[in-house]
Amino acid sequence: MGDPKLYALIALVVLAFVANAVAVFTPAWVCTNSYQYEGNYGCTGIVSYVAAAEPAWFAAASWLMFISFATFLLMFFCVYNARSKIHHHGYGSHTRKWFHFIALAAFLIVMFTVAAVTLVGVYVSTSLNNQYYEDLFFLGYSVWISIGSGVVCLGIMGLAFALSRKDGCC
Image 1 (tube, one colour):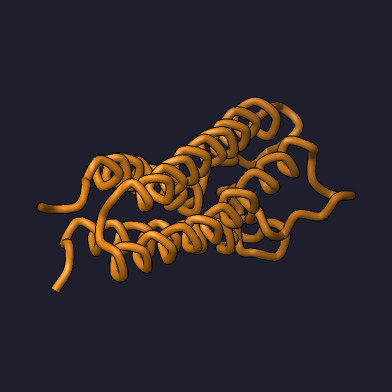
Image 2: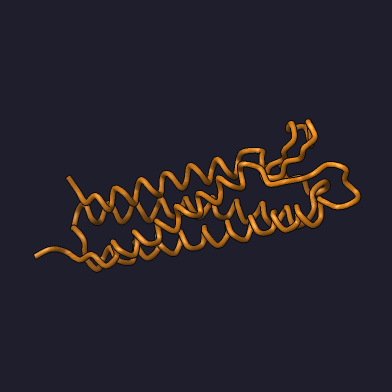
């Protein structure tokens, strides 16, 4: 049948990718208590970034999340290559580098997500919630989904390192 750890790694990568895609492309990063903000019924997302209308910290967070999404595409390539090599030749030193690349990609995704969430969280609480705005701004569900994707990426890192230490059998 195959190694259950490898299939668990593939399942975790797919789960984290779907969560990251939902987080990046849903319009609920910054929400307000008023009914309609920027035409999105109380929320605005990372994708709806408009250079003239949004501050620079939102652009930086947007780019960080887009880069994390693109890094998942590189991770899929590494997972495919690792699975292909294992299917044809079994575990060995030739598969170790692919698992290290998977762990590195997962680490980068975690770092980009942490940086983007920190940017949005800090600047929503300091820049938007002040005396100039009468509405209260808060983080929406997209931020929490991206945090969940980052937590799953931590599991991907651990599992990829565990699989990289596995050698061929007797």
